[in-house]
Image 1 (cartoon, rainbow, N blue to C red):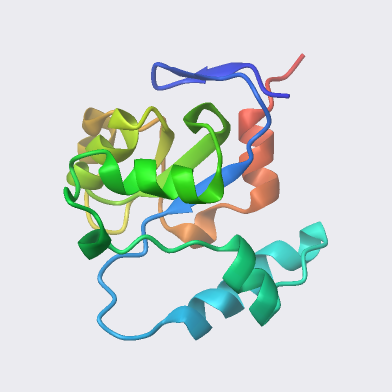
Image 2: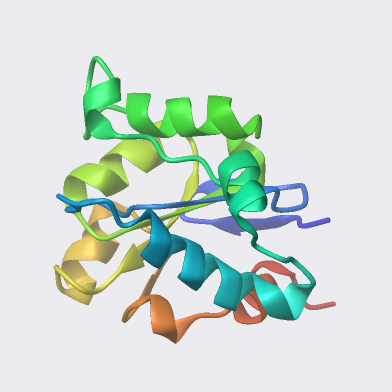
Length: 149
């Protein structure tokens, strides 16, 4: 398990869920997302088939929520759908309103520096900032979240 503090939130259990901000899509990008999930999860023994993707990957569309970001509702809905407690989840966000949404849902949040400066993301309260999704792997994330003895 994990017992480490990040950005004022404490992670005390195994990470069971990761929520990504994949906004800005105006077309059906599921096939692209599925290929990326397949590539990222394969080294950890996951075979991301069509069935796996439909069963284990959940998308929350902003329009499905009564209140969008910066309200926590989109992240709370994501947590509800994947049946994970916020203490066992990490969110990746690239915008101040998204960061506010994730943090208000009590999720440890990592800033993605694709749209805003490192300083802006840190001032919003993220636990850490990465340049983009290529800057981190699941193994690196696990190492960051596992306290050294």
